[in-house]
Image 1 (cartoon, rainbow, N blue to C red):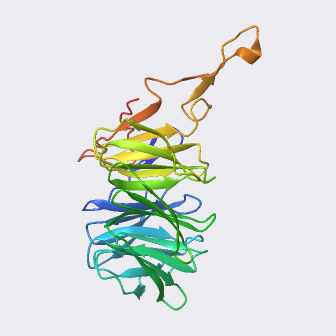
Image 2 (image 1 turned 90 degrees about the vertical axis):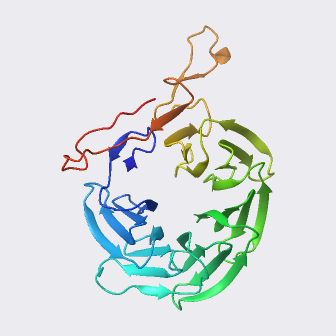
Length: 311
């Protein structure tokens, strides 16, 4: 499903997989999308029209997909423990295959201007050289890796496992710092300006930390189930959280700014300096987007109707 980033408005739904979708990504200019699924395929889509462009067959469940910056290659990883690199200009050709993982791959990402690959299985993160297709270094962690985010500005790798949120150099895998959360964390995201980070997990809460000091800035509940994914928007103005409760929620990084659905209203007062900004929103300080059934069996178009959006 594709939604507008600043409002959560539904744009369209990609229909075609016959199993659970485990991973999804957009290319740099958001013209193409890629998905990884339990039906043993990865698919490439036209993100504007919703048309399926390419289906890439695998031998097991696919968990992760990632485009190169030029969108010419797609990296996949999954339960068969292999990394595959597909040339999208020749989708019928056999992919380059990288082996070395000892359990199913949970996440695979391009790094260092697509010259290296970062991948994670159960308790191991590995760094690969693309030109030689060989392992450069590996990192063992104490518990199963739950998420991994690559931040190109500063070459930072964010890894979560158990209650730990760890930051490593994406070039050497050396640890920069780590924080411990009160509950098991499933996902974490670093603000583009590296001022703060957000994390969510099994206790239904979102946590915001100061990246420099590790101080917990705030924590709050909004979801009614475990949180499985959190991500900042590219401009850092908001972040999204996805939960087992079937909702996606959008949150302002700095409450009180006019952005998307959030409108800042300054009351008219004689003393302008004394005026205080207040934020008005329909209902709450974040927008709840309720998961819904999109297409009926009789529908023959993926963009036929707009599902109900509850705010």
